[in-house]
Image (cartoon, rainbow, N blue to C red; front, side):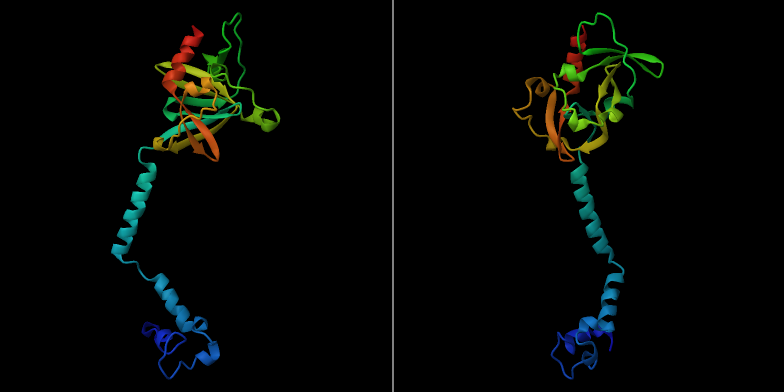
Length: 221
């Protein structure tokens, strides 16, 4: 009895020819027969036709292309309880939290002081104060001290350093997925936000770097 004759469809449980398969008395059902089992294995192990592989390969490439076309890379970070993102190309590096040396008679809370970045003295600024962000509840982020980082960014041949409470790394997303800024967001924060996108069940504000650093320089004058 050869499996290429599909005996289960002729003299088996799905067939109507006689005489019936003698093995049915032993196995009861064709699914329990080694001939049926081997036929299934042969079907799964057979070489795929070239046209089948080409068809599915093209389909997967098109799907992947739709997902990644126009995608941009951003760095996702948190300041207090707010999740934000800036274009990854702006970042020179991300370093561990270091001491910030305050400046006497500073005129604005936006300027935190000076920091030493690999032997170079850099201005350390506060996006928290620039954007008027509220303090995060202490209990919600009770282990955040170990996650604090300083982010070093370059913009228009100038470097800026600002502290963040947490960095989640680089994320790629398609700008077409940006949503409008909800009216419930504070006016100052919404001013610097291009739009909102969803990441890891969180709503992340994509910051307008041109407007952000323009106002930052004005705030330090």
